[in-house]
Length: 270
Image 1: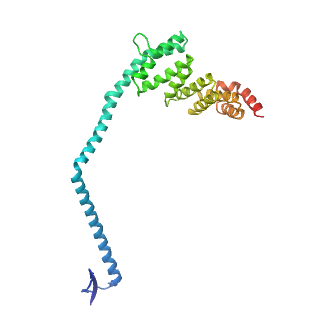
Image 2: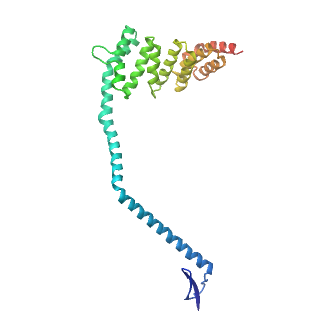
Image 3: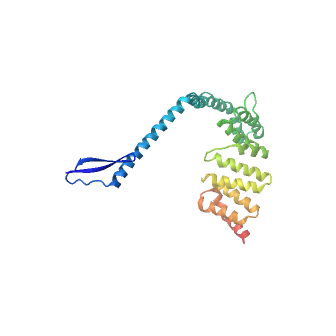
């Protein structure tokens, strides 16, 4: 059986004969219109993609000179960084560590109490043509060796009672080390105590205590924070630090007398 099917072409309506198969359901005029619109939308999408691709090609063609320049600059930066790291930075670091060896030896001997003041000065300023820590800081700025030299210099100045210079160098030192990082902060606190700047000292003691929660440095600086807080009249704050030692670090040397300080802080809090 033959029927007529409606088609839309542009704005004109056309009819086309087709064979009606068994079970075939003719499309309504609305369904036909929707199908045509969908096909039209798909065609528009592909046309848009073609136009975009064409514009991109035109842009690349017109600006390829500048694109290559940008790529070249990026490549130079990356290769320059890698070259600097391998051929400049690492050899410079190795050279700095070699030059610092003499100063480290003098510092360690000073810590052990052998003519300590003169050895601390040699560690700082060098001798017999050998670099001191200050030379390492100035000559190898930006290297890990110079960073470590700031720690040594700060501790040397602290022992020489030059507290302002101690603070200056220790404040420049940065580390992720479990022990050195809190010790540097705590040493700044010690320097501020000597300068009678207890509020500043308390701030650094708190920082040192919380920087690394280990059984070596943390109880030491919680203890110093507590003592300093008591001297500032902050008994409740001090009590918190003392209780932290009692609860978290019962095996520390500070815990042996901590009950005495807890009692003192409680008495001052009332």
